[in-house]
Image 1 (tube, one colour):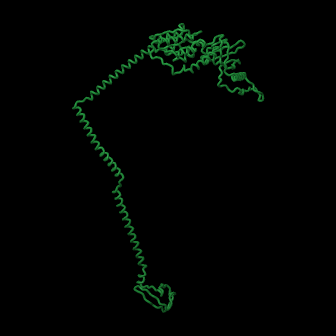
Image 2 (cartoon, one colour):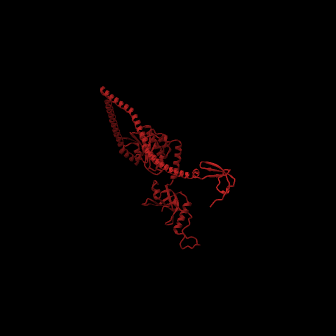
Image 3 (cartoon, one colour):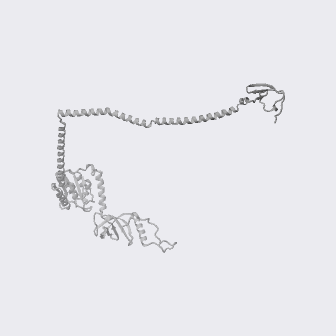
Length: 465
């Protein structure tokens, strides 16, 4: 039945058209779509609001949801409060209770029933009381009554506890039971006072002032059990708050249940969720003190044992350091030998390092030095090869030169002249090769093998066949 308001689609989303609707006809809504749109219209039109009425037909389902009817003299409306909200209500309404609910107007789509979804519920008239509570809280807060700086810490070891409550209250039995179980060594002083009704606030303040004046307890508990805001109103009075703030010892307020808050809670040095919790905060359990003492004793024993062990170890160290003169001389002799060895090593070590470096350099030089013997052998081989080639070339050149010399000798003009030939030149020195170049009476020079002669030409005759 719960509606997820955060996930609602837009109110005027287009509804799914009926399969039988023609394209030009208006859309046909299903009943579910109609109820959904009406529900959204109601939720958007009526925001969360407070509604007063009388509870009727109240039912608490196994699921934890509450179903009831809210009515007045002239009308009624169905209401539902889901488990997630009902668990914080603080009370279960009964038939005929006058209440005020903070609700959202909606529609239950499955049945088409108009209803309200209740978010919060309180008894009728609580709103005015709550406003008075807030006004007083702001007033006292402005006066610094609730400042954290004025809060006092609880004593470490509580010997006596004072209780301001009604002797007939069930809260007193719970407190006594808790203190007896946890801290039976604690002395308890009761300062009786009514916890509700006419004049209860003044009597509660008087009991607190009595406890403060006597100063016979270490911690004061101001407690009562749960109830409605009207039942707890005595602890929302200004006189009680001032009495708590002026108290000479720390005050723990344990009023109502865990969800109940009163002005006394803010004025007290410490607030407890319940009266039983106030008793538990007031005194550390005896078992815890015994365990703490046992732990402290164990720590002390371990510390003493550790100190003795350290002292014994220190004594042994001093005993080892007390040596005889001969042992001291022997020890110094060993130190002298060690120093001599260290000095020798200090002198030799650089030489060894330099020798090692020199050996490395020699090895590197030897690896990079050329092989002269192989080069010499190669040079000798090249010399022999080049000598043989040169001698061969020279022989060839000599033979060629001899042949050329022989040819040159054969072509030498001197040799031709020696064989009886002559060279004839004219007066200008030109060599004459044809009779046509010679004229009768022309002077000529004839060169012979062993000289030359000047001749004259008597006649010229053509070449004979």
